[in-house]
Length: 371
Image: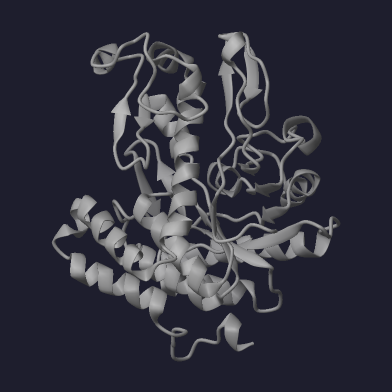
């Protein structure tokens, strides 16, 4: 891959609407509504998933101009829901037809309880059982891979350094991968023993290219970009929250440190805007639509939110090259999150140690860099 620094990978979303399906914003295309205005720009880097984008998706048909495609494995759907009759090798063959980088099929070490609306973490015994099943999938896929141009990256689970290192050591006992990925913990609301700084300590020590699954808070993106600069490794990340924002009617302001409500269900929230006037942004989507069209179009919100995240990533990659600017931005980002205001110095010290210290030392652990 030729990407440098930190790169945001927009998550593909396929909508069911008016009895027709489309995956939008990947290349210029006209739609039924507002036809004269539907000439959207193209994102060269995308993140696809077999059970979201669809196993019928192809590079030639759906992403004809793509420069880089990362393909997820659908491990959550396969491992947690267990409702899809698809094997790891079925996923691999689809990935080989579409992706530059693909992830091995994992069984997540947690489940989602729909009744309580909470994540439930498994016991240590279950963690080790799912680790064994996931790693066997990874080895099987590595040995069965036929497309030598596609890189296969191993999936690691664990919300903190210790769990991730245990999983990683088991995964790489006999096989190594070109890169690795793991689900990032939230900087907003930790679950049980999650520690996002510990996760990034693991990534730094392993020392390969990484993809961080599922989160793109401004604070995280800032640390991703600075750490990538220091390690001289490629870091990519994605989030489905652009789609969540779409469903909730959230319109991210430039630099998306706050959001406006553009909800069809609560039109009064947009009363302060001229419904027939332009939205408060000059991006390629907003410049072609009115506030009313943004509210009614659904997909227009998604396109705008992805654009804002993409531009934020570009700016951050440049700004964090200066250590003083990075330090000041870090202060502001920590101040914006109530969770860190009272212990800002402690959190900033941890982040600075993560980025500027030499290779971390962990007694009794043989690391990738030692081999």
